[in-house]
Length: 385
Image 1: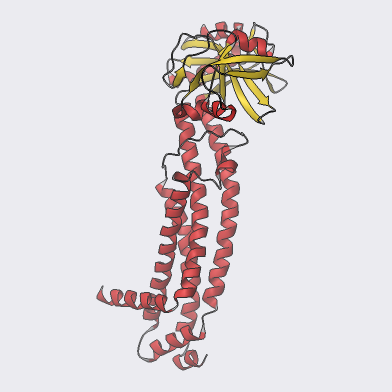
Image 2 (image 1 turned 135 degrees about the horizontal axis):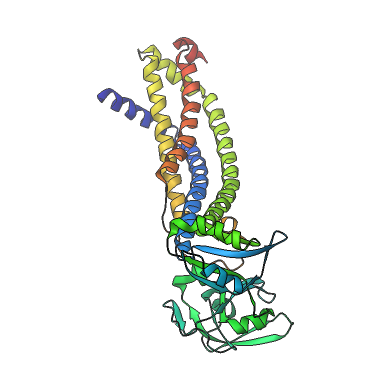
């Protein structure tokens, strides 16, 4: 142990003597690790947020499919589904998307069937009249609106409809309500020009979650033109989307890592004359090849671990403190109104170990192999070169 400590002390002194070059290499190394770590941290955090959000979603959503596309579903289908054993409730839902050309943003409009229900994250009250609506904090901010102000929307007939804002959702529910507009279901049907006998989809509440697959088969049997979507399938879709988007960013980051490895290899293979002379002198005064390799190992490990710690901390701060401004637009999606929610620190220890292996092991190899070639050279030849 004392011998290794002495070798470690000599390695630290060697790094200090080449301070300028090692600091530059450390910064590039840490930046590469920070890019890779940011992708991993942000993907895990968004995946965790999606899981927590879907905990409050219905166990199953039933859509009608026509020519492979989502179609409006008859409200009578809800009665058929509600009569299946194991179904607690089947509720037709009316909702849709609205593009506002003034602010160039997409809003989600949803109909309310029970305006007397009070929501804890709502300041004010749910809309009760056809000319009232409740909006998310993102919409209120983008229009500078408060409770009692008017919101003008253009309906399916091209006419301006004026709605009084009866309530605004708080920022605590921004992940779900940031771009949401709630209005009474009859008003929303008139806005979208929807027939009273149809709905957008049907939310199904199931008593026993283990029966979801069985009930989905029964729904398809009784209603062949429908597509039951379970909550687990929705979560799987989110996972696939995040994995695909993070995969693109990770591929770019891996390319940067490969470029860094090439830089490190070029740096290591191009051992300076002073370093070769130093190794030759150490061999001449009695140091063996193992001692020289131990010094180079400690130098590489110190530099790579320092870069890994700096890069990981920088990635953590970038994602969980600054909100990942460089990656969020790519991984969140296409929506203009991004909900400004704070990401919860969620990391997978396995991914941290993989990141450490992918970034530390290549650099150590790039450091040790050229050092070994010099260490096995005769001392006088190493000092002459």
